[in-house]
Image (cartoon, rainbow, N blue to C red; front, side):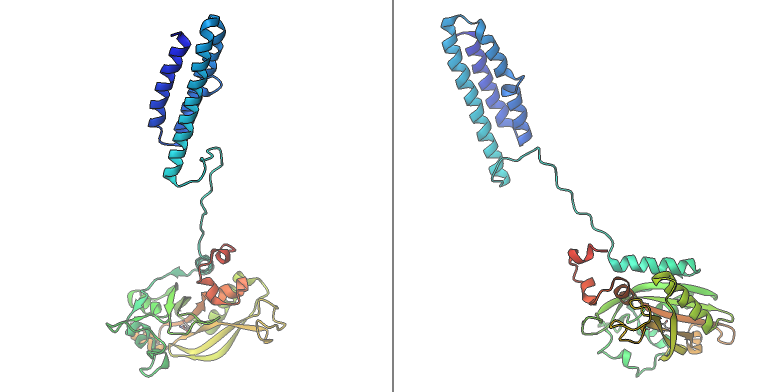
Length: 338
Ligand code: DAH
């Protein structure tokens, strides 16, 4: 047996062992390079062929060719074995670039909440928080809401078996803050609220509000209006104006609803503002003395204003979203736009 035949036999045996130890296509490729690659064993052996005596060359040539195809067969077998394990149809192309994982981002409602809070913080408000599972006292009683007020109805508010409720507004945070802090207070409280509404384009069973409360000596409705005006400008631009309309809320006196000039038509009138030039934003007012009494503040000393904001409403106006439900379908094609 000449030296090439021997070398081929050893190589085939060694390659068989190495292939059987391979666990992935990369391993197989490394073995291929070692034996069949440009600088591998087989090209090296073929160079030695010319040094052989002519009678040896025939055997060596046959052994060389058989050895090489044996290794090629082992390689193919190993690759199909690996692919069968991974369920792939074809050999894995290890030169393909990887797929980038998709990165998510914050929900538009969270983004907008942060934006609103940042605006109020610049005006000196600090952030307060309260529980989503609330008691009737904080959500209604302390807010001067009469026992027969329709908003307490089972049809409107979610009651839990233990008598507590899912808060129907962020206003109870006003009570919790005043119960635990002495005046002056200046807070905003963003959060989720729940109502027993049938979902449609402008109503949902849960949505988000930001509550505002300012208590100090000598606070007036003009202060309230200027803060809302400032917020409107920061949010929608310099031209937006605020209008207050008389309204009723149990916890404020006087109470108002406030409107912004329509951010779509600039106040000229369009389908979004139903040609009125104004868009209703939310409610506000001067804190009712009964509320101060409930938390132990002296209403002859302290005055204050409170306001609410619907975040979904602000989002619909800012992004011209026609249907609130789009925000909660969690369709990434929609959410990706923000
Ligand atoms: N809590 C009211 C609601 O959900 C909104 C509201 C009105 C909040 C007047 C206030 C306010 O703070 O003063 O409809």
